[in-house]
Image 1 (cartoon, rainbow, N blue to C red):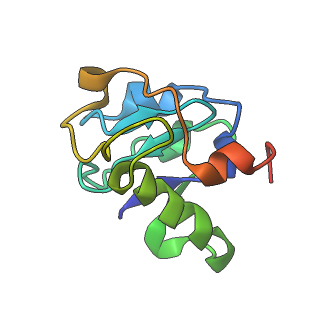
Image 2: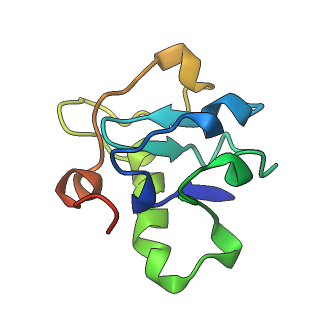
Image 3: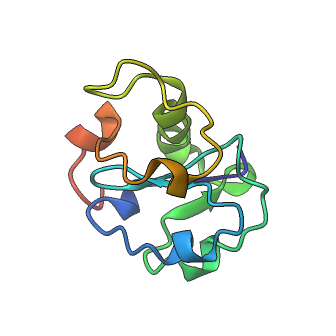
Length: 113
């Protein structure tokens, strides 16, 4: 997974990263955004525009962020609350629109933790 989004995005969702992403791989949950690891081309355009530094490069992220790295991937590989199947790799966030639900970790985590 090239980039992932941490808890710093909770309840912020500035969307600057979405506008910068050339492959439309940043999906909108309810409280935060998620980068699809299979669709991301590792260009890094999203990272510098995030006003809260929520976007991390997996290879250089601190170990304490491993939970959020795994959670970011889970958004696409496991069925989300109220959904029958995993989101998978739909080929672009605009195709599916706002997902409107988050992973269990994002739901139970307070903002900025």
